[in-house]
Image (cartoon, rainbow, N blue to C red; front, side, top):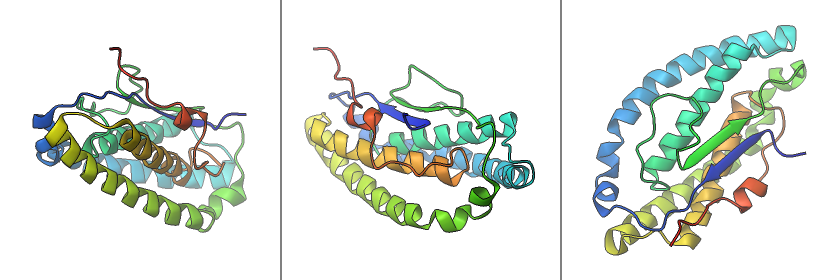
Length: 200
């Protein structure tokens, strides 16, 4: 059975030197929006936590909202880290045309109250590994910044490394945000096959 949260990224070799150089400045509106979006998502998560602990169900509306926030966060992270060039949408709806995509299987019929109640403790190993993968993504982004400025290209090997790091952080966020009860894999079929080479 495949993991209920998938991450996909399309590989594009040619990159814009100009937008790469100013990427941090270009991301400022996204940072501001993320701040307010995160506040709303935090409230939704608290409500969802109580709902699952009491009823063993994740209300569909809350699930979709948290999934949308997670999707936005993933696209924002990918853009800021130079994994892709197109500016990400501010919403959290699914966008098949965007080069970085997350899909969610939807809420389970019933959730484990115990796994939800103790989620913070169960997630400790994931948080540690997520931190390490975030550092790897930041190092990759720094390297990509220099390489793109000098060559106008994203090396495939560096892209694959950054996809591995970004995909794990995205799926670990899904676990932390109660969107799945299953520990995120280090990589899966979507990660290994991520990146469709642009046509020559």
